[in-house]
Amino acid sequence: MDPLSALRDYAIREELDKIVRVNGEFRFGNEYTFPCSVKTAYRSKQGSYYTLETLLFYIQNAKLKHTDYIQSALAHSIPTITFVDRKPLLDYLTGKLSSSDSIVFPLPQSQPLLNPNPPLAPSLDGNNFASAATAAPAAEDAAVGNGADVDYLALIRAGERPLKDRESLLQCRNRDFYGVLVASTRREEERQRMESQSRKDGLVAKSRLMGADERGMGYGGDELGYDSGMPKVKMHLKGGKIGEGVPIILVPSAFQTLITIYNVKEFLEDGIFVPTDVKAKQMKGPKPECVTVQKKFSTDRNRVMTAYEVRDKPSALKPDDWDRVVAVFVLGKEWQFKDWPFKDHVEIFNKIIGFFMRFEDDSVESAKTVKQWNVKIISISKNKRHQDRAAALEVWDRLEEFVRSRSHN
Image (tube, rainbow, N blue to C red; front, side):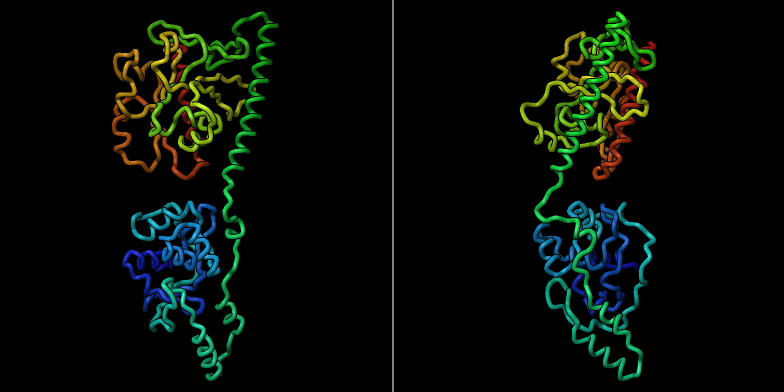
């Protein structure tokens, strides 16, 4: 039995009070004995493994607010868990979750020892971090009396506890570095925006010198032109209609969908998913009626990329605007398509590519309706933000492929 499994077993059985600390060890009743500082198989989001001491102290104080828990842990000189690990860790230890991606086996560590004797020292408090100060001298005297070699250095180390570790040093109380991330992201957006505008200005100048109103490179041979710096795309849609202007992407206006007009720019341009409620609080002023997005992480530096308008009010579109709609992020509800100028879902998703964004661990029921439609289901993780870029790239790839197919019809 490894220490993580033993701790989870005792937590589910509500027998945490039977775990007693004796010197530098935890004794699980009469069953197992583990070193307090032994690493468990539970890895934090930061990459390090939590010790048995850290996990036991947390689960015994899980009802405390995180700030109160941190203060209590520091008072006991015990390393703490991070806030993002708090809920998933508790759910796993209490049996609400049967498994977790944070658990990594095998992990080199000491094997548990069978504990044939009852605990030598009772708990001094509700946290079961009892001291066995009287037990250590007694064991040492017995060893000396029997003529055995005493490893004094080992005895000293057994009573030691680390005051600080790499994680606790990096943690700053009452400080939130999210603002730093937001500021750096905004600076990067401004830099990319200036570079994009510079490229557009250069193309406009070139177009005027060549005496052409519409010239450039597009998706698979699309005609891409620039008029006063704004790209213009000519798309041939089914039925012989031709839509000229910036292509349009529609998103739901409802907050219960993952992609909205608030966070679509960060997701499609930077490959980062920021929840709508967070972005809405960050934005100053009223909700924008239109957002311009452009693929920024293409591997082809010489490629001229098309800009897209993102809107969330289909009722405000004119008939000519509908000819420019190329994509829609679906909510999964029938009423989203009310009063659209199409007869049914077949016609909608034949002329417009549909995307449905979901969290990868959502229930199958959440996508039950959209699976009946001709839409692309894109999954992202709730916590692993480094995977957002791949999801955004999949949207771009499918969108570009769709636009190319439409332009050839």
